Amino acid sequence: MDYRILGPLEAFDGDRAISLGGARQRAVLALLVLHGNETLTSDVIVDELWGEEAPPTAVKVLQNCVSALRKELPPETIRTVAGAYSLTIEPEELDRDRFERLLAEGRAALAAGDHADAAEQLRASLALWRGAPLSDFAYEAFANEEVARLDELHVAAQEDLIEADLALGRHDELVPELESLVTRYPLRERLRWQLIWLSTARAGRPKRSRPTARRGARCSPSWGSSPAPRCTSSSARSSRRIPGSRRPAARRRPAGGRGARRRPRWPAGTSSSRCSEPGSTTRWPAADVSS
Image 1: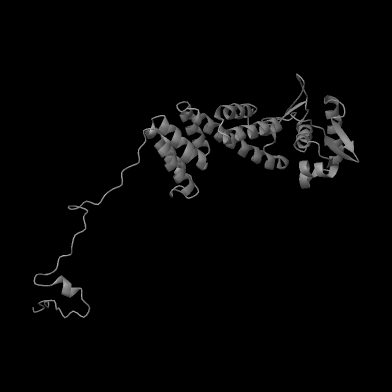
Image 2 (image 1 turned 180 degrees about the vertical axis):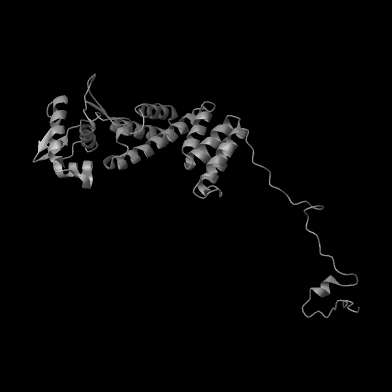
């Protein structure tokens, strides 16, 4: 069997696509897939799918859905245990599990410095995605938590792949992809401050990166404040690694002329040293107030 939730729900028995039936029947299968090899009672399933609006016939509808699914799936795939249901899923039969395995292998290779293998594994993990996870259940409460978790993993996998590709010198082709991701995910600091800046600088197009970075900064949680210290320091470290990049020279205070510190001017005939002494008796000329 091949169950797919990284996109609309699909199921295949070899090359044969399984007919999943109507919306309620598909929801029953989706819930069983998300809890593969777990035992769910009828009450739990009814509560997950109908909530407080469960009709009196909800249990009967559930039984009919399970019966229809059993006709399509291989024998003993859906088991009944003391009035509860369990869907048997073997290792590698669910695309979510394959994605997470490839992602873990890619991250391990990235941490070990094997960027070529990391890019291969991460690219293979992202190739399993066919769209938004469980897109046909986007508004179903039972799927919300898992959809949010998978969305976060998907973006993180893209960031990891970009890091591996940057290390392999694939700079030019990554610039438009990074700019698109920054526009789509403006609050992702890793994309905005490290990856987009590093790739455009290495590609020799720093000017093009500035508007994108500014757009991201305006959307940051601090609403236009300075970037987080971690991002600033990573950018500074990156600038030292980029061949040909130079830090801006520190501004020096001119020895004289505009900007130099000047001594205060004192009235004629007055000693500056006496004015600065405590208890000085120096008197300023009185102003002429006669009319």
